[in-house]
Image (cartoon, rainbow, N blue to C red):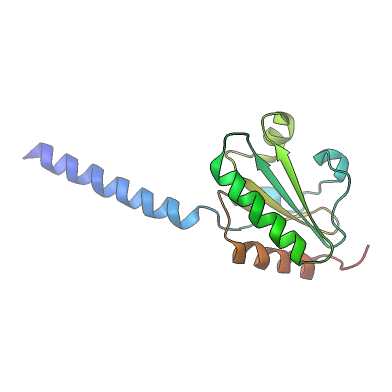
Length: 145
């Protein structure tokens, strides 16, 4: 009987964790550690930042959700004038990964026009969430350089 109780408790805990993880996966949010952090094109290894906003994606070669995220971010960047998508290989930029606290791929950072991190998503973000985060970046930051 004790084995059944333990098994039930483990299943309940695993189910609760699964629901919590699914709810948070890919959601755009602001972390306290990111507040006010500014990144420039040189730090990212990019040619330039976007005039209005920049979508920064950390990915790895064999990450399946990274491919879908790449398509989503490229599509959104193409729809919104002045937005640039920058993809960074996490394995080759471990210094930046550690500095920014990137724990998994894909991780997406949304930067405003000044390069300030305004939102972050760990996991594959939904298109609507990316568009909403861009709206926050454009509203919070200057619209022209």
